[in-house]
Length: 237
Ligand code: BJW
Image (tube, rainbow, N blue to C red; front, top):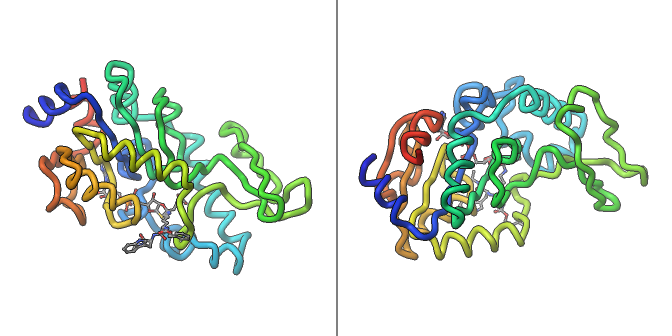
């Protein structure tokens, strides 16, 4: 912990790469951990364009369930510690795979969202986007656009490209970062997980905060085993 604190204190540029684990202590289930199944479906069976075209009602039901969980959740000390660190260290870029918006609600501002935003609906026909207010989540909105087209959640599913501007911003931030803090991700989903070897080859120190070993723990300079909501306040405070 002391070594990692020192790296962070001395760094001019830091990237935090977050995944579902940072929201676990807010009560949002991770994808691959306990509670990752919904009605016996794995996320890989639902988070695909094929699943949506086969049964849009089923996929929408999953997203509405998740929206209602997120709407009732609050940012936890892990989200808050990153937001406070950003206020003190303006050269922090927060790259998140999460779509839940809890980093925004914690007060982080420089957020790069790799996998989109669960609070946005996008029309399959005219591409128009609309934001769903999280306090309206219980009001089951229509899943049709004004143009008559079917709406889908504004997130990135398996087999879909990440938003190009977000991916470029993440790559650029990682290439110039002196320290990359990887929090609450299993590091199995690409291209996001590829940011870790990219950081290593650009010379950054990489710190992992996770109660479990992950797919890329072998590439990490410092593994802090524990919950983000406990470790981040101690590490960044
Ligand atoms: C805690 C904790 C606590 C618990 N504190 N920690 C290279 C190799 C192999 C495959 C591929 C590859 N490149 C691409 C692929 C294919 C695919 C992929 O990666 N597949 C692998 C799974 C095999 N990738 C894609 O398809 C991507 N697209 C793509 O590559 O496009 C190419 C293309 C180019 C041009 C044109 C067209 C296409 C897209 C990936 C999209 C991922 N989408 C999802 C759903 C988002 C929407 C939604 O939320 O519904 O993103 S899937 C899901 O996984 C979600 C997450 O962001 C993502 C990562 O999961 P994450 O965050 O790591 O969560 P978990 O659950 O896995 O891990 C939680 C961790 O937290 C665990 O480690 C716990 O221990 C820990 N933890 N409590 C700290 N308190």
